[in-house]
View 1 (tube, one colour):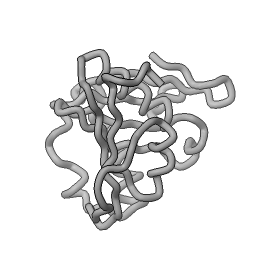
View 2 (cartoon, rainbow, N blue to C red):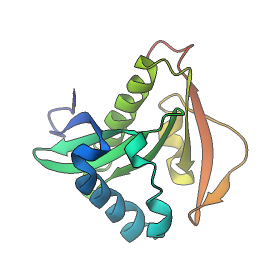
View 3 (spheres, rainbow, N blue to C red):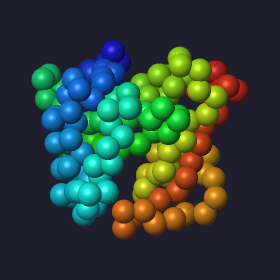
View 4 (cartoon, one colour):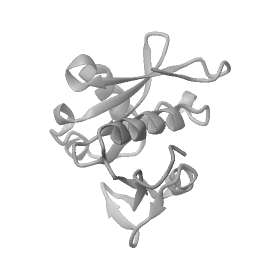
Length: 152
């Protein structure tokens, strides 16, 4: 479990889909479907049961989530509006990167929404290729090598 700073007052845990699918789905629907206009048919891709999920909690309330796929891709990073810019996304990302490192992944990849490229860049991810459109939003493929960094 990763604890947020005292001002943020949240904790991150790693979960499997069957433990909290309803709450994880609710956060993702609020952020991706309601807020960003991603069609629900694209948001729900059937891969969640195969993934390890990072979940941020403020007390008993789920406030953010992200997932690590078996192939080393990180995705579905979502933080509820009132909790953004308070370290929740960074803590979720750190938990997922560390989980990938522990299982022996050499590289983690993600498709960052273009507005979040700076966030991921600040966490050691490097852009790969040209931006592209997915789910009506511009994205940038990014990667971070885990076999050469020292847990930065």
